[in-house]
Image (cartoon, rainbow, N blue to C red; front, side, top):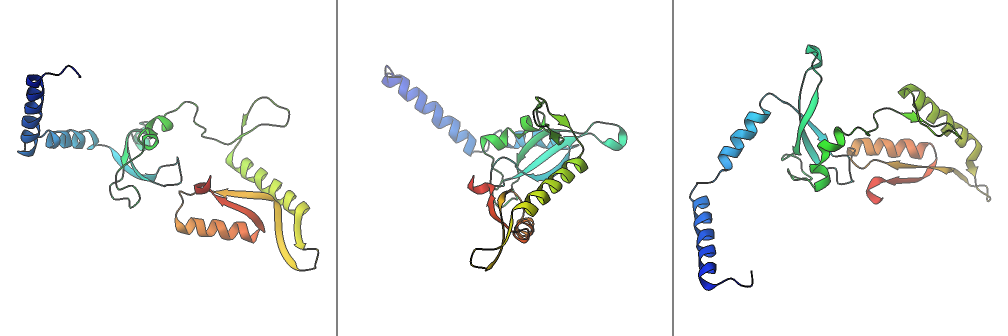
Length: 196
């Protein structure tokens, strides 16, 4: 680039000026690209969702083909930012743009798993078993470590040995209910994914 002659510089500048002028005059491929996009997504089912990666909670549009009623395996084939979402207004970061790889990953966890103490492998368990185990262990810990009154005899009703980390991609209503449930149990260690 340092050996650019004056004549070469004028050629490059002229070609750039002509190209940008043609784009401004309407010779742009944008309408053609929009038609290709509409054709590609015309038979797809559109689903709105929230990106699971970070605490920003960007809106995404997922497009899938297939219908379980007709014995066709449903599969998502395209993901893009939601232009109507107030957080990201149609844009996505590189992680959000690569969300399709996250969905189709062979190593993605889809079911609860349990590893027994001393074991070297994980075993798949049902959702009811997982939730019952979590509830049983929480109750045991709360019963063993709940503090009703402090040393001065004041009522404190706190549970200090367990904490909760909430998801930040939830709605305000879900966040409010999560906070109320955690505080009603006496949990003081309560934080949000946005601070992690």
